[in-house]
Image (cartoon, rainbow, N blue to C red; front, side, top):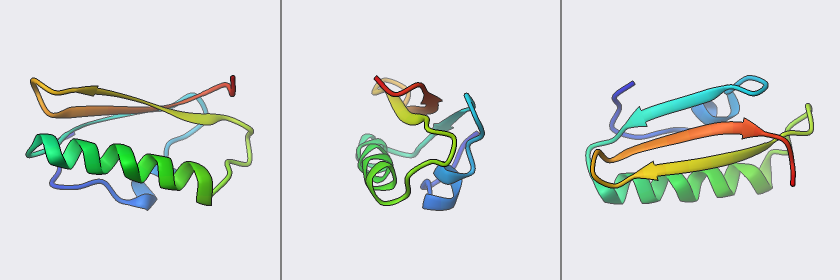
Amino acid sequence: MRANKITVDDIRGIGTYGKLKVELPSYLATVSARNLVSYVRKAYKREDGLDYATTTDVTNNTITISTVDKK
């Protein structure tokens, strides 16, 4: 998916063991999205007990957000 930004609703809408991969316009947008995931992790606890994991690719300005088991 290609977007200008990621919203809280996008992150919270990821299903159980789901994955969201987004190409953003710049590196700063990927850093902002990673910080937003950290906010969502703390502000909105998941009902299924899973946690969010992020992976960023700085060459393509993509971020992958997935739900995983808590460590």
